[in-house]
Length: 207
Image (tube, rainbow, N blue to C red; front, side, top):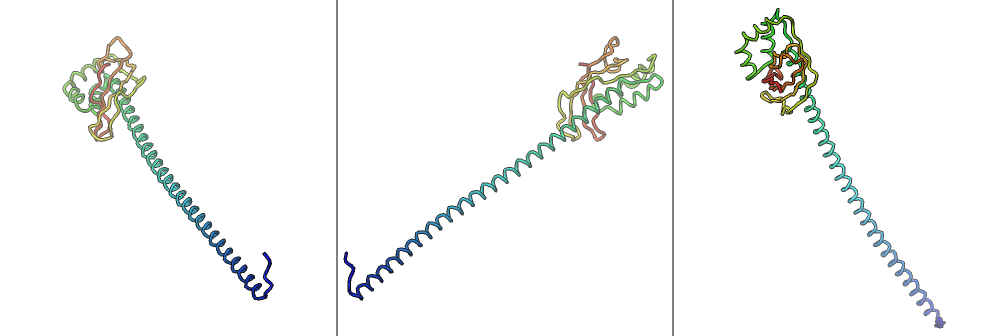
């Protein structure tokens, strides 16, 4: 196409070219702005999603940590309670197998203090006979626990809670707890009941 020779026509053509270039530049800026805006929106959405995910993860971690702390606390409480029951059963069984004929009445008082429920009632009823049996011993008797383990776990520390303990003892006079006088070892199922005074024996039966 031959450029116009008329100065006015040339100016008009130049103006049109400038106008076209400005329009093209404006359209390019608009398109670029739209693209930047779309990218910003997408980036904002990604950031929001990341923040939501991070918040959810934090909440889950807090819940998990809290749950684990509660479970650990409960497990510790349960372990402490089990240890307390076993210690009480060991101590009571040892005391019930340890007697001195010179102090028969003191022995009866001691085993009564370690007992509750049916066991205590039985000992109270047989207190005189038990005292006479201990007084008739030719020498003091002794016993020691060889092993002890829970048969049933204590449900709680509340008064009235019960547990059963299997106890293996070595005794010089196993008759005190219903054992064979010819044997020096005795296996017992010892029932324990939680009272205001602690864990006491409610039964002691040869297994």
